[in-house]
Every structure is written in structure tokens, then in C-alpha cells.
Image (cartoon, rainbow, N blue to C red):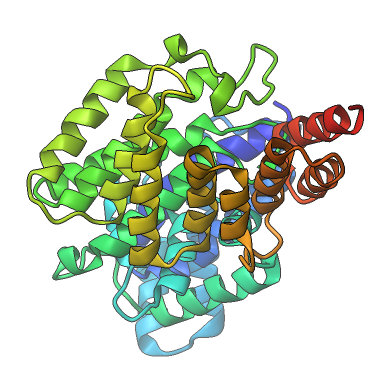
Length: 397
């Protein structure tokens, strides 16, 4: 097994191991520390040869680290007694239940701000690395590492159990799943355009959450958004894995079963009349999925939906997407005007959109510079290849 395969296996097993250790020993923060140490050890040892039962190996190593830590750092009677009792417990080799939702709600603790709870959840439940989470938030990796450490410190001593009022944490849980899906649909780094394991896990968890909160319109809207977006995945890349932009996709490859399921979920939420963030984004995805071609898409409705979404969230990425839709309705100059003064921490997407709009205007110099700037700022190999090709194409005119 190659190192990249080991990395994927560890990402898959990390939440399962954490759930088992945290459920057995109670304290989430201590269990997370122990599992992270076990993962580091596995990353070093496993490329030379996998253990027979990788998940059991992680649980066993993490459990031993946790017991050793209790014994080493705290001599109080309670910890001594706890360590003694834990050391003679029969080791559970596999988790007896799926603890994903418990971990989701636990990480979204009321004492944590969203800037702390969401990154912690992305690591604990989704198995994302600190670097991937930092890329999703457009912040330095060191900054994100500090946030995760602060979150764990605040949760130290908390028991591994559902909160008394899970509904109060639904918004944070939804945001976590949305970011997880986005990382899977377009990976922030690596040689592949997307990571089906991450987007698939986000959809699985969203289905579980919808089952727990079937009457919440935003939960249903989030699941609808994921399904309507995931439906386009088969056309997003060529047979060789190269990025295919939306305007050039073969729409006959789109998954009509997912589109139908997503539309049914979305339409059911709209009956309530109160439209939230995820329902709006799902509605935009639906407008794309229902269009027979890129040109025939109802861009005016999409631009209007983005304007509403921007006023609701203030998210600068929404302004970027809105600029594309406005350009399709009013022309590229109007789209560029919306980008003036937009701050996205030097995001490659901002440079890429500017390149596209400058090219539509007929500018001969700016597009190549913007495409090159975008290529230099993405860690996704497929996106970089596409942007480099675009820069070369417009330079050769």
C-alpha cells in the first residue's frame, strides 16, 4: 500500500477510532489527543506494512496512550483509580455503534464559537488534516492549528454524549457538513480534482441528520444542495481526470436520480415559506441542473438568488459567484464592477473569475496574467493544470 493509500485509510478510520475511544473513556478532548498520537504513529509505520486489523490497531494504541497519560500527568486518586480500571478493561476491537452524530453535536458545543467548533469537527468527524481545514477557511495552517488546540482545551472534561438540546447546535452542524462537502467536491489540495470519500461522507452524515431532524427546512435544504451538486460530478472531469468547466460539460452524464431526489427535498422545504441559506444555495443548484445548456440557464434568477444570499450571509464568496451570474445577464463589465474591492485572502478563484471576465471583454493582456496568478495560488493539481492551459491559450492569441 502506497503512502497516499495509507493517508486515505487513516482519514477514514480516524473518526471511527475516536468514537470508540471517546465512548469507552468518556472525555472527548483526551481521547482526541490520544487518537491523534496513534494516527501519527500509524502514518510512520503503516507504509511498511498494514496491521491485520487497522481500526483495532488504532483503538488499542490510542487507548494505551490515554491510560499512560492519565497515569503520568495526574496523581490524584480519581485519575489513579480510573487508570487502574481502564488498564484491565477488555479492549473493544471495533466500535459497537456509529458515533458520527454524537461527535458532530459534541464538537459544536455551546461554549465554542463557530470559528473553533467547526474546524475541530472537521478534524474529529471528517478526518481532515489541519492544512485542509485551513485552506477551506482561507487562513494560514498555524492559525488553524491554534484554533483547534483552543477548542480542545475548552472541551476538556466534557463527557462523550449528546447535548440536552441538540436542536440548538443544528446551524453549526450544518455548516460543518457544508464545508466537508465542498472539500470533497473540489479538493483544496492534492493531485485530484475531487475527493469522493469526503463528499460521500458529508452526504451520509447529512442523511443521518435529516433523519434526526426531518422537519427542519435548512437541514433538508443542505441535503438537497449536496445531492443537486453531486449529480454533476460525472461530467466535471474528463476520462483523464482533467477539469471540465460547467459551460463545457456533457449534461447527459449528470445523475438524474440524484437531481430528482434533490428537487423533491428542496420543493418540500419551500412550502414552509421561510427561506434560509442552504435552501437558497440549493435553489441555485437546481436552476443549473434544470437548464438544458449553459446559455439557456436562468441566469437572472441565479443573480437574484445570489443577491439575496449575500444580504443574508455577507460571505465574500457569494459576491464572487454573484459576479459571474451578473456578467451573464448584464455583461462582463458589470461582473468586474462587483469584484472591485473584494477581499478573499488572495484566493485563486477571484483571479480565475477576473481572467474569465476580462477575456469576455476582449482584453488581450489581463486574462493571461490573471490565469497565471490563479494557477500560482491553488494547491489542487487539476485546477492548476487547467489554469496554466488557459493562461497559455490566451497568451498565444
